[in-house]
Image (cartoon, rainbow, N blue to C red):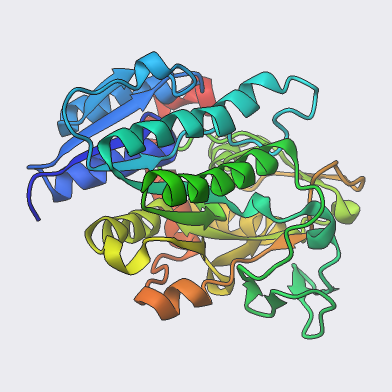
Length: 356
């Protein structure tokens, strides 16, 4: 493929920085630009990584239109900028999450329209309403919750949640801003000719994620085991049986790489993307795997009360995208945890003050 210029918003974040570096390594003749406001703690550590990889870093904010001015042509925009916490805005501080996740996306879409750039939007599984997710029928096993065969809702089978899952009802301020962005993306395609693909991502994990309780729980769990700090099971009886599927950041890169170079096959589509049922894990299972990988066992406190906005399980049904282009994740949960462990071990002194 000829020289391409790719702008990645949120380019110093976990997903954005990894995509930028992987793209530059695979396509050294491409110009890769990472734009980030460096708000999230630890994102500043990626500036050196980006520079060493030959990625251009711009300190900018998608909330500010003046930061989105480029004289040379932009061919692709990967919108990975977001306030990613489900809890964002729950304490009535709405401005940042709305201005970043919705207004910022609109500003970025205007840039895409100006340059006629292809638009790859990293959305979220949290566009699906909390009440419907809570009403998924499931059974309780020894270590995890399992999706039942019989369901009263559309778009849910034992494979997980598909794109046909209902979208009416509330979903969190974070989820609402991402769904609103999806709607605006379709408007920009219709009226301004912006071609797009939307990836509704589940949990994405891997090295260079600065994990916290409300976002990045896989890294947080590995870090807690690494430094021998206790963990806690919140909600659903405090047993740790909540389940999520997990996708390695390199599996997401494989997908985005394909989409960039085969846009004619994915343009105008919305896909659920994640680890799927084979790469799913409960908190209890995650604790056991982390203990095996790190060699450290920690205590798990139990807090039975449910937290607002939490859900018992989420597994991505990737059938649509697999049927459409053949993509499916290749790395396992253990692969993900091992990679995070080796990253922490290699950068212990630098990461201790952030992750510990």
